[in-house]
Image (cartoon, rainbow, N blue to C red; front, side):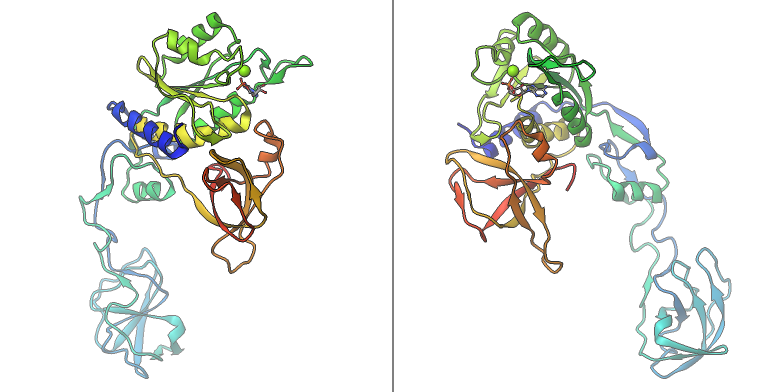
Length: 406
Ligand code: AMP
Ligand code: MG
């Protein structure tokens, strides 16, 4: 059986070999968060566009403002203002953060290191040429590449786009992800469930995960555990780039997902992973759609989505697969799990001591992979390696942050 890391690698390779060029569309900057950039964005001018003061203080000629020296202050420059006169020798000018340093000045002295008496400024420290000035063009020249295609637009990327005046951004169309829950016991959340029914929470959580990952969720109506209904709903899902099924992949008599997909011509890359929760996870391709069959237990669905579906959304969306952001933490209580499977246990990481750079992690008591109530108290999954099933308190472990809350 594949390890979770091998299975993930297979997902990445298969997704890369099917990442056809995607069409691009113009997205207003205010709506572009999380989209993947499709074309280069270049600087419209030099950055900074002028020699920018990074401090409130006095613009000086460094050689004039020696330790113990005094200069006559001839005025002030606010951010956004200019002075036309070059700074004359023996003078200084008060300057604010973000203002343009006048011609002739080559340093800014922080106001904290000066004393003022009338218009006479005394300097308490030596002054170096260039201090507290970011020279024009030192961050970018006009025409320089500011943002590369394939970048996922986060807040920093959007800030750069805003800075260079790119108010509308060419972005790849997000991959469309059909979401198909299965199970005779699963009812719509708007229905009153019968005594042995459960509401369809997976379609909601999967839609949320798809959105967070940068895909467009396409929720379908739940499929019954019947070949004809399942085949008809899968048929709808195959119109999209990715199809994510939940449930129906275990060993039960009515777990029909794999056989129905096979009957529709699917090719499978794996149908089991040495992982808990998530062992019966299926990954394959049917026609032009990459298909994931995730186990129906809600926590299994959530973990396997994070491990396996996110890289496909990244790659089909025109970005690189983001790495698994594993953190190292100190385990606070001993754990013992079954060997041979990598476990992802709901847990909480906390940075307990304010000075600690590395967090502590505590596994949470839970009722198994149907227990979403416990998951709301978890902010991560504690990774118990397949070949190291017991870990002592005080040992270092890896944790996978929940990608929505941490
Ligand atoms: P399955 O993988 O089909 O054997 O389902 C495993 C467990 O997950 C069962 O207890 C199901 O009732 C539950 N389950 C399956 N689908 C959903 C869903 N859409 N929402 C919530 N729970 C589900
Ligand atoms: Mg089922």
